[in-house]
Structures are given as structure tokens and as C-alpha cells.
Image (cartoon, rainbow, N blue to C red; front, side, top):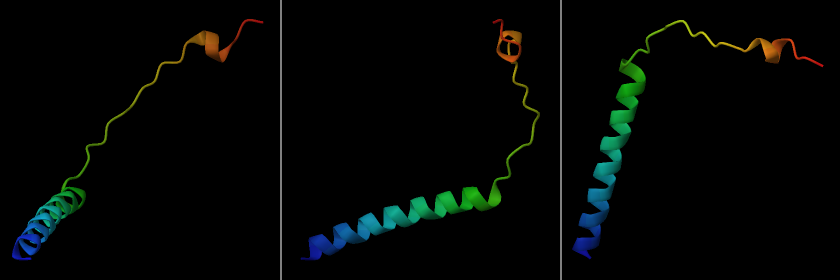
Length: 49
């Protein structure tokens, strides 16, 4: 059974590292704000009937 416990400990360690990395990105990284421009063709605004 020691190999099973070692494997589970290894998996838990990897999961913990991934969790801490994602948490630190969410807390410490601020997104940059920028203007977004979307061009809409005039045919979609004023359809020809």
C-alpha cells in the first residue's frame, strides 16, 4: 500500500500546485482595460426589403 499512498500524495501535490497557481493569477493579475470597436455592416442595420 505505500505505493498507492505515494501516488495519491503526488496527485494531491500536483493538484495543489495547479490550484495555487490559478488562485494567484486570479488575485494578483489585473486585466488591462481597452476600448473595443465592432464594425457592423450597414446592410445588417438597414436591411433592404
